[in-house]
Amino acid sequence: MKVKQSDYIGKNKVLFKKLLEKLLENFEYASVLVSDSVSKRYSVSKMGINISEDDMLTSRGFVAKVYDGGCYAEYSGNDISEEKISDIVAKIKDELVLFGSKFDKSQYKIPEDEPLTLSKSTEYEIDPEDMGDEAIIEKMTKVYQAGMAEDEKVLNFNVGMNYQKYSKLFLSKNRDMEQNILWSSGHTIAMALRGEEVKDSSSMFSVLGGMEVLDDMMDSVKKTVKVCLELLDSEPLLPGVYDCICDPETTGMIVHEAFGHGVEMDMFVKDRALAANYVGQYVASPLITMHDGNGENEVATYFFDDEGTLACDTIIIDKGILVAGISDLQSAMALSTKPTGNGRRESFERKSYTRMTNTYFEAGNDKLEDMIASIENGLLLESPSSGMEDPKNWGIQCMVSYAREIKNGKLTGKIFSPIVLTGYVPDLLKSISMVSDTKKLSGSGFCGKGYKEWVKVSDGGPYIKAKIRLG
Image (cartoon, rainbow, N blue to C red; front, top):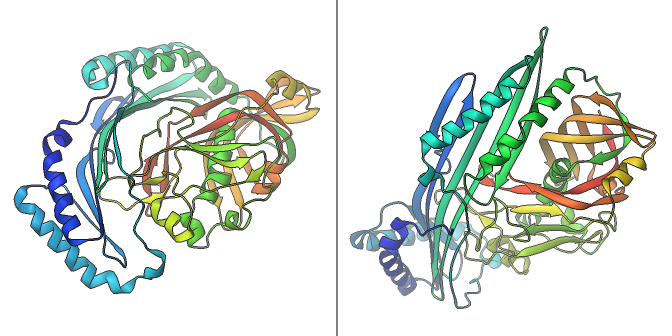
């Protein structure tokens, strides 16, 4: 089934068109973005049951954007009526008088506004609103109970999930576009106790769809608990440079933190990204091709961004060579490049930045078993937990939950935890020598930027073999 248009947008579209017409009488360019979003969070654990509206992702409002021939101004609000339209136009004019003279106008120009009419929706199997809170909690409780019953050492088994259903309308002189999206994501976290030592293990889930994600969560229970119990026997790792195989989630963290932020082109404009100096050069192994955008259907998929640019599949690295960054409309105009559809807002109340969407490495030709067999003394890295990037100097520091020992081409069963992954990004990417023939993306988390403004992202890829500094 397809996600339906928001009633709010449907009932008020005529008013927003009138607002646009009034703006175009006064400004060389104008656009209106309308968004209507609902989101909920659910959790079941030993601590109890929680159901709450997600304040960050639940909003309803609009952004009017204008260009006066010298710079841009925006007005955001959540109150629209026939009477309000003249007031909104007047306020935008006042803002331009007050602040327009403070900006460097040389980099601003009118965006392309080719005619386009579009109305698209993503698909789902189970609508969370139709399913209802009671049925969702009932199914999550069964997952929780299965986790608690798996082993007597399990101290707690947390089951969490959230969803967002949103509709957006973008209007300009030549564009009338609507999109309706539903995504869901979740996690299971096992905690185990031995003596005074507590360890935990998590599994993450995401789908461009609805409550069908709950079935995947039930299927993960045994694995989540098994890893948690293994971690009770884990040892600290001796720091050094190792031959490593990264699982798809760890690959995704490297893609996102090590290189994704470094090719956001608003950072090029601000001279805060070293990647700007390496377009056309090798930055990774020839085995690596990197994408961002709608090449995969995951939680960050959409049909157009918050500036009215169509989403696309952007190839960032092509067989090791950096060929393009990702951009919002403003940074693309400043750099005289084509926008890639990556202008995203946390909500109508926040500004637009260049933001990643679904970011990943392409699969290669190697079998995982051959990759493991190729390592004499190394590690299999699994389950990343957090990461930090330095686009200005191409440094990376990430946390990985655990590493499995590989000796003479075989997994020994020995496990190390926790793991700190560090290094210089091009050195890491150029050292990649094998890439598996399957890939996987995951979108259970969010990405923060600016004043910690959050948007949904996914990342991933294949298993990769590389030399990595660990601690």
